[in-house]
Image 1 (spheres, rainbow, N blue to C red):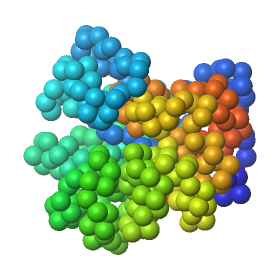
Image 2 (image 1 turned 90 degrees about the vertical axis):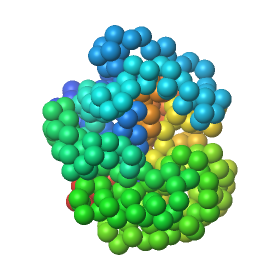
Image 3 (image 1 turned 180 degrees about the vertical axis):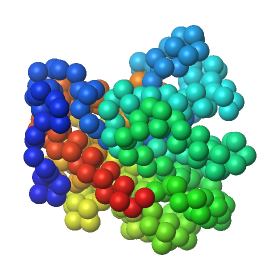
Image 4 (image 1 turned 30 degrees about the vertical axis):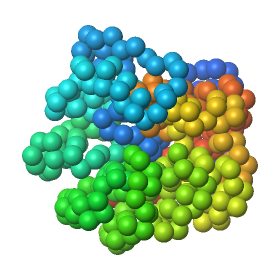
Length: 331
């Protein structure tokens, strides 16, 4: 892993001690620059932000969700019940940028569904509003908007959505999310070919609920640059070597995977295996508003559980920041 993308273990600029030392000494991690490369826009803020603005108490979920449907039901009851409509969505979006500022997120890749982008009736107005929120809360953050297409979306409609957005030169990556393999992956080849021709970073949810073979198929058929989650790849040394050899990054979300029953706990989380096999990885939140775990907490839990060493986590942190700098050059 280090031979691929390891920098030094120097401390963050302006910090008295290094990130690794802060982990070892149980110091706060919020002020250290970090990336969050997998964030769903309307679910990326903190529960505290929503409670402060709405006055409604949110009952955090402590036990794992039984399914995606169970998770969505909790989200509807605890979050959307006080954040409905366009006004509620914008409050949640504002919370996502406020959280990025509080956490010192220097690279933020945020997913938007097509339905979110047309809520105001004009895509350009939505882009202006989003940029205003970013400038208000985190003007120095490298912001990489991403178009999220549902696996269940008809491939022709998905291509239409992408082609409608491309002239705005706003999105910098593409993702397939929701129900993995709801249709054959080959159906999306024209979509991903168009995205590649336009210089977008190619991603897809694969191996969150599927198999290691599903991860490899998605990478090969869609020519992916990165995989969202991809934890099922840990079951196959061949797939892990394939990811390593082809420099395919896995954007991991530990608490999300644990809370959805895809991994047992932090100590046995497969990031340890991926790191040892040399698979590039980043650490992210996915849906912080649901899982109530910041990027800082993700790093903290992986260290405190004994899963990863502080220097290893610092290597991953720095890799995520460098990935963001490279993505910024493409915007």
